[in-house]
Length: 294
Image (cartoon, rainbow, N blue to C red):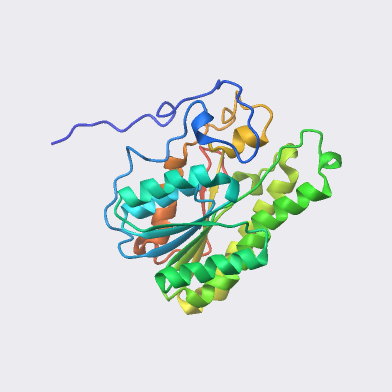
């Protein structure tokens, strides 16, 4: 009989202070210190998504890569979207999915464009015949410490089109191809409830995702399609050094004293995608490191 003790969540992963590591968007996982953990050596599947066909946006790195890895090790095929400039990151996700014995279909796609969203869903249907799980995870942010006066129309447009328009278009286009028992999982944020002043536009979209999730769940309940969301707190992904000027103390504000690693978020998505969550819809799963949310 094993006597292995559970790990202390405050010490399981590195805590700040981190080295300063300025990067340009979209960021580079290999240059991050410490390197993010996507579950490469830790996630163990148990067949909970066997035979499922899944679509994930932002699947090249961060939370998206961790979810793709977990889905594959649970038995799902994975089609994932990534920006063209993130091809190197996407290749690593492909490697992880294929090593798990599942199909990996990478699609370069800018979800800010409706036509690109249509092409993504069409490709998924061509590849799989149906979509069992859609994960709307791709997001964009850019810190503006000087407030609303420094948020340009161009930045606001990019944040809203990436975080809201893309989710809306992909959900609308995917629904006809999602059978009863399928699900949509959106990525919102602690920012939806406790907005940071320097992320005003990003926080606004994350609040919209909460409302969209709950409203769409009510719309689709009679069709047997569940819609839920995950609300992470601070997570150590390439988006952070690429969009925030000061990363040394990133995550220290969480009660657990550190940022989450992507691997710590993936199990929530697996649960919501699985039949074990068959009575759960219109819910927001909070994974904030101890920050209480409504």
